[in-house]
Amino acid sequence: MPSVLVVDDERAIQRFLRPALEEHGFRVIEASSGRMALELCAAKKPDIILLDLTLPDIDGLDVLRRIREWSSAPVIVVSARGEESDKIAGLDQGADDYLTKPFSIEELLARVRVGLRHAERAAKDPEPVYVHGDLKIDLGARRVWLSKTEVRLSPLQYTLLAALARNAGRVVAQKQLLRELWPDGGGGPEALRILVHQTRHRIEKEPVRPRHLKTEPAVGYRLEEPDV
Image 1 (cartoon, rainbow, N blue to C red):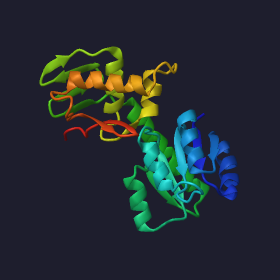
Image 2: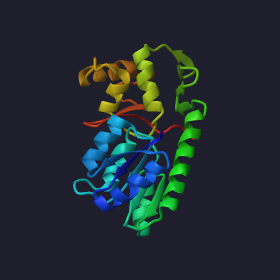
Image 3: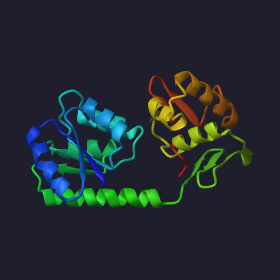
Image 4: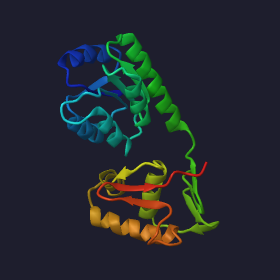
């Protein structure tokens, strides 16, 4: 049963969407604020997100931007803000689709099905090969090269690089990395900082001036966009 996170502070919208989605086989999770949406997205990992832009605490575009720092779940913006500039901003921030209120439940369900199909195809695609300058990471083979010389990494170092490579060009939040690296809660920010420091010494020619693995202060880490 796929799960849908509905982010909207209008009770009328939630009362309209819940029975319609449940009738079509979806498990519905509701959030009435941006902060609640971020917490539920991290905790419940919904299969798809329906996101209103007008929320009582955080603008929906900011919520979308923060979700995209660590989640690839399809996001459909569902908003009364129907100006072209709002649609462009939503898609630029990482939304997969944009639906303007009012809308029919049939159209919404069709958009949801398309989003889920795209996500399913992406999940089945072969693991990509990341290349940036002299760094190459083959996620399928679990191998890393620097200037055509294979780099030997510890399992944790590789897990860190793989998580960043799958989100290349985007910041991966520190909390997300901690969950992936130490799912039992055994690591912390200092352990992550040391791991990043060690990994840089394996994949950077000048670790103090990194070309590939960058720090976003107070947020997390990212690998640069791959070469085209």
